[in-house]
Image (cartoon, rainbow, N blue to C red; front, side, top):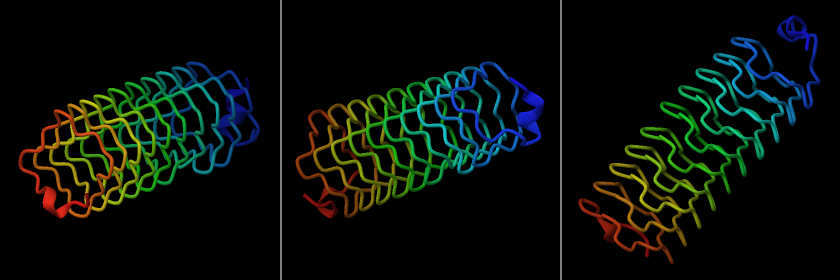
Length: 213
Protein backbone atom coordinates (compact mmCIF):
# COMPACT_ATOMS: atom_id res chain seq x y z
CA UNK A 1 0.00 0.00 0.00
CA UNK A 2 1.33 3.44 -0.98
CA UNK A 3 1.28 5.25 2.39
CA UNK A 4 2.67 8.45 0.86
CA UNK A 5 -0.28 8.57 -1.55
CA UNK A 6 -2.64 8.20 1.39
CA UNK A 7 -0.88 10.96 3.30
CA UNK A 8 -1.11 13.34 0.35
CA UNK A 9 -4.81 12.62 -0.14
CA UNK A 10 -4.42 11.01 -3.56
CA UNK A 11 -6.24 7.84 -2.54
CA UNK A 12 -9.91 8.16 -1.53
CA UNK A 13 -11.04 4.56 -2.03
CA UNK A 14 -9.33 2.15 0.34
CA UNK A 15 -12.03 -0.49 0.66
CA UNK A 16 -10.56 -3.63 2.22
CA UNK A 17 -7.07 -2.10 2.39
CA UNK A 18 -4.47 -3.77 4.64
CA UNK A 19 -3.10 -0.98 6.83
CA UNK A 20 -2.24 -3.04 9.88
CA UNK A 21 0.30 -1.34 12.19
CA UNK A 22 0.74 1.58 9.77
CA UNK A 23 1.53 5.09 11.06
CA UNK A 24 -1.30 7.34 9.85
CA UNK A 25 -1.12 9.88 12.65
CA UNK A 26 -2.46 13.35 11.79
CA UNK A 27 -3.40 12.19 8.27
CA UNK A 28 -6.41 13.75 6.56
CA UNK A 29 -8.79 10.88 5.79
CA UNK A 30 -11.97 12.93 5.64
CA UNK A 31 -14.62 11.23 3.48
CA UNK A 32 -12.23 8.39 2.54
CA UNK A 33 -13.81 4.96 1.98
CA UNK A 34 -12.16 2.49 4.36
CA UNK A 35 -15.00 -0.02 4.47
CA UNK A 36 -13.76 -3.43 5.56
CA UNK A 37 -10.19 -2.18 5.92
CA UNK A 38 -7.67 -3.81 8.27
CA UNK A 39 -6.40 -1.10 10.62
CA UNK A 40 -5.46 -3.35 13.52
CA UNK A 41 -2.72 -1.75 15.60
CA UNK A 42 -2.53 1.29 13.32
CA UNK A 43 -1.62 4.72 14.67
CA UNK A 44 -4.38 7.18 13.76
CA UNK A 45 -3.80 9.62 16.59
CA UNK A 46 -5.05 13.12 15.77
CA UNK A 47 -6.16 11.86 12.32
CA UNK A 48 -9.12 13.44 10.54
CA UNK A 49 -11.83 10.92 9.64
CA UNK A 50 -14.86 13.18 9.42
CA UNK A 51 -17.37 11.60 7.04
CA UNK A 52 -15.15 8.57 6.42
CA UNK A 53 -16.65 5.13 5.82
CA UNK A 54 -15.26 2.54 8.22
CA UNK A 55 -18.20 0.16 8.26
CA UNK A 56 -17.07 -3.39 8.92
CA UNK A 57 -13.47 -2.25 9.40
CA UNK A 58 -11.19 -3.90 11.96
CA UNK A 59 -9.46 -1.44 14.28
CA UNK A 60 -8.43 -3.72 17.14
CA UNK A 61 -5.84 -2.06 19.35
CA UNK A 62 -5.81 0.95 17.03
CA UNK A 63 -4.80 4.36 18.43
CA UNK A 64 -7.40 7.03 17.64
CA UNK A 65 -6.54 9.36 20.50
CA UNK A 66 -7.52 12.98 19.79
CA UNK A 67 -8.80 11.97 16.33
CA UNK A 68 -11.89 13.36 14.61
CA UNK A 69 -13.90 10.17 14.13
CA UNK A 70 -17.31 11.58 13.22
CA UNK A 71 -17.59 8.69 10.80
CA UNK A 72 -19.58 5.62 9.79
CA UNK A 73 -18.29 2.78 12.00
CA UNK A 74 -21.26 0.46 11.55
CA UNK A 75 -20.27 -3.00 12.81
CA UNK A 76 -16.62 -2.02 13.15
CA UNK A 77 -14.33 -3.91 15.53
CA UNK A 78 -12.75 -1.42 17.95
CA UNK A 79 -11.85 -3.90 20.66
CA UNK A 80 -9.11 -2.47 22.93
CA UNK A 81 -8.80 0.62 20.73
CA UNK A 82 -7.59 3.88 22.27
CA UNK A 83 -10.28 6.51 21.62
CA UNK A 84 -9.30 8.84 24.46
CA UNK A 85 -10.21 12.48 23.76
CA UNK A 86 -11.56 11.50 20.32
CA UNK A 87 -14.46 13.36 18.71
CA UNK A 88 -17.23 10.85 18.01
CA UNK A 89 -20.16 13.25 18.05
CA UNK A 90 -22.98 11.82 15.95
CA UNK A 91 -20.82 8.89 14.83
CA UNK A 92 -22.54 5.72 13.62
CA UNK A 93 -21.33 2.94 15.93
CA UNK A 94 -24.35 0.69 15.60
CA UNK A 95 -23.37 -2.91 16.34
CA UNK A 96 -19.73 -1.96 16.83
CA UNK A 97 -17.47 -3.92 19.19
CA UNK A 98 -15.89 -1.52 21.70
CA UNK A 99 -15.12 -4.08 24.36
CA UNK A 100 -12.25 -2.94 26.61
CA UNK A 101 -11.73 0.21 24.53
CA UNK A 102 -10.41 3.39 26.16
CA UNK A 103 -13.02 6.13 25.84
CA UNK A 104 -11.81 8.49 28.57
CA UNK A 105 -12.75 12.12 27.84
CA UNK A 106 -14.31 11.11 24.52
CA UNK A 107 -17.23 13.11 23.11
CA UNK A 108 -20.12 10.86 22.08
CA UNK A 109 -22.91 13.44 22.04
CA UNK A 110 -25.70 12.21 19.78
CA UNK A 111 -23.74 9.11 18.77
CA UNK A 112 -25.57 6.03 17.48
CA UNK A 113 -24.53 3.04 19.60
CA UNK A 114 -27.56 0.77 19.42
CA UNK A 115 -26.57 -2.88 19.76
CA UNK A 116 -22.94 -1.96 20.42
CA UNK A 117 -20.73 -4.06 22.72
CA UNK A 118 -19.40 -1.80 25.48
CA UNK A 119 -18.62 -4.42 28.09
CA UNK A 120 -15.98 -3.36 30.62
CA UNK A 121 -15.47 -0.03 28.83
CA UNK A 122 -14.26 3.02 30.75
CA UNK A 123 -16.73 5.83 30.00
CA UNK A 124 -16.11 7.81 33.15
CA UNK A 125 -17.17 11.43 32.72
CA UNK A 126 -17.93 10.92 29.01
CA UNK A 127 -20.48 13.13 27.25
CA UNK A 128 -23.26 10.86 25.93
CA UNK A 129 -26.04 13.43 25.82
CA UNK A 130 -28.81 12.29 23.48
CA UNK A 131 -26.90 9.18 22.44
CA UNK A 132 -28.77 6.16 21.08
CA UNK A 133 -27.76 3.19 23.25
CA UNK A 134 -30.79 1.00 22.67
CA UNK A 135 -29.95 -2.65 23.28
CA UNK A 136 -26.28 -1.86 23.90
CA UNK A 137 -24.29 -4.16 26.17
CA UNK A 138 -22.79 -2.03 28.96
CA UNK A 139 -22.15 -4.84 31.43
CA UNK A 140 -19.63 -3.71 34.07
CA UNK A 141 -19.01 -0.47 32.15
CA UNK A 142 -17.71 2.50 34.13
CA UNK A 143 -20.15 5.38 33.55
CA UNK A 144 -19.35 7.23 36.74
CA UNK A 145 -20.07 10.93 36.31
CA UNK A 146 -21.05 10.43 32.66
CA UNK A 147 -23.60 12.74 31.04
CA UNK A 148 -26.43 10.53 29.78
CA UNK A 149 -29.14 13.16 29.84
CA UNK A 150 -31.81 12.47 27.19
CA UNK A 151 -29.95 9.32 26.12
CA UNK A 152 -32.00 6.37 24.87
CA UNK A 153 -31.00 3.27 26.85
CA UNK A 154 -34.14 1.29 26.14
CA UNK A 155 -33.41 -2.42 26.56
CA UNK A 156 -29.74 -1.79 27.30
CA UNK A 157 -27.79 -4.21 29.51
CA UNK A 158 -26.24 -2.29 32.41
CA UNK A 159 -25.68 -5.17 34.80
CA UNK A 160 -23.05 -4.32 37.44
CA UNK A 161 -22.34 -1.02 35.67
CA UNK A 162 -21.02 1.98 37.59
CA UNK A 163 -23.47 4.87 37.16
CA UNK A 164 -22.47 6.73 40.29
CA UNK A 165 -23.09 10.48 40.01
CA UNK A 166 -24.13 9.99 36.37
CA UNK A 167 -26.55 12.48 34.81
CA UNK A 168 -29.56 10.45 33.67
CA UNK A 169 -32.06 13.29 33.53
CA UNK A 170 -34.82 12.57 30.99
CA UNK A 171 -33.03 9.39 29.88
CA UNK A 172 -35.05 6.43 28.62
CA UNK A 173 -34.18 3.28 30.57
CA UNK A 174 -37.39 1.39 29.78
CA UNK A 175 -36.77 -2.34 29.79
CA UNK A 176 -33.10 -1.88 30.68
CA UNK A 177 -31.32 -4.41 32.89
CA UNK A 178 -29.66 -2.67 35.84
CA UNK A 179 -29.21 -5.66 38.12
CA UNK A 180 -26.28 -5.08 40.45
CA UNK A 181 -25.62 -1.62 39.02
CA UNK A 182 -24.62 1.28 41.25
CA UNK A 183 -26.58 4.51 40.76
CA UNK A 184 -25.25 6.15 43.91
CA UNK A 185 -26.13 9.87 43.84
CA UNK A 186 -27.12 9.69 40.16
CA UNK A 187 -29.43 12.40 38.79
CA UNK A 188 -32.69 10.77 37.72
CA UNK A 189 -35.09 13.67 37.17
CA UNK A 190 -37.51 12.74 34.38
CA UNK A 191 -35.81 9.41 33.66
CA UNK A 192 -38.04 6.53 32.55
CA UNK A 193 -37.59 3.13 34.22
CA UNK A 194 -40.73 1.45 32.85
CA UNK A 195 -40.13 -2.31 32.95
CA UNK A 196 -36.48 -1.89 33.97
CA UNK A 197 -34.81 -4.58 36.09
CA UNK A 198 -33.34 -3.02 39.25
CA UNK A 199 -32.66 -6.18 41.26
CA UNK A 200 -29.83 -5.58 43.79
CA UNK A 201 -29.11 -2.19 42.21
CA UNK A 202 -27.72 0.48 44.54
CA UNK A 203 -29.97 3.56 44.54
CA UNK A 204 -28.62 5.37 47.58
CA UNK A 205 -28.65 9.14 47.27
CA UNK A 206 -31.06 9.14 44.34
CA UNK A 207 -34.52 10.65 44.32
CA UNK A 208 -36.71 8.15 42.48
CA UNK A 209 -39.92 10.11 43.00
CA UNK A 210 -38.69 12.55 40.36
CA UNK A 211 -38.19 9.72 37.88
CA UNK A 212 -40.98 8.42 35.69
CA UNK A 213 -42.27 4.96 36.63
